[in-house]
Length: 530
Image: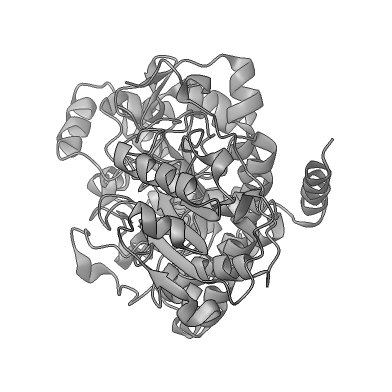
């Protein structure tokens, strides 16, 4: 067994021994459900129906005059998404900024569960400052398809590693009073037609590969679970009674609230009877369909009460109804959060190849070129990807390198082959922009691939810097590069960490949390993608 795996097993065992489940619960589950029943008894039928679905896009419904305020939910695992699409933006006082942390797969690459706790604690503190009760993360779907546009949001391909990181993420998040939500339950390993796909998975694979991270998060005391878009063995996950009742509630022992992913369900009767607790954000026709089901006797008011009971009980269990919404003094911790982001990037950056050129001592003349010299590599636009976090004080690659190497860094946007060949050292930035709802090719675009090949062929002192949320095809140039560094989506301080690694101030210690195939034909997902 490799040393890193032994260390990880030891950390998981130690964490399980010292960290009790039910992190930051203020009321036990039995008492929370008793109080929920009392509150439900005071609701009108219309209010009960309203609790069955979301409110204003990213809120759970509330009746403030009955001591049940609206509950605000926000994305995402790698920081606080600055929400600009609320139906009623006056319902919350938005944060003016939030820290952009390295993406979760970069966190997984640290193989450091204690750092996952610290990372989530920082995100949770920013949530509490901004009045966010529920963080829609961590994401933990298993890396099976290297083209998946959301791999960057997850923790890699290994169930043990993912479980260890997820458990500490949940504990760190909930230590702040912000409640975590595990997503997406379950087998949502592709974005290609995610609203049409059917994941056919047998019981052994389900229990050995896909369920362990969710079990770890539940054992850590998580309050919420979000079901996925896809079908599992023929039925949509968000209205799948076998999945929610037998597996999630029965086998995994989950006692909190189950919510659907946004617009992921379609059969109101099945939703009500499946064990789902709240349809998010709720279809326009929902209220009419519920009333028709009541009128025809296909569901009863007791069915509605049973559906909404865990949602209300979870808010009670975590004290969400009875506390100050905003904790503005936590805004003073932004400098510490920025430092945490730097530490995650520093431990998560992976050195894939080094022929001896690194560390790069001061005095070398550097030609810097490529895709991300002036821009921070991130996922798609601010509204197209729920995981997008814009950050502040973002440090570009050029700025980070010049802070170490000064004027020895010369940026050339489109160098000729002759310029590449004449350079002392070439630093070439490449990568992908991954985004929710889409897959992207395993190979870089043809022009980008040709540029990288030209550089490594023209100059044997070319160091390739890759920013991506999952693997890319590198076979055409990997063996010719002097060094290859995988930097993921590094967050606002990640390039500072990269510069410190290039200079030798830091020793690279990141480890790949997934396999990078030579060709997509080597992938478990071959034949499933166009």
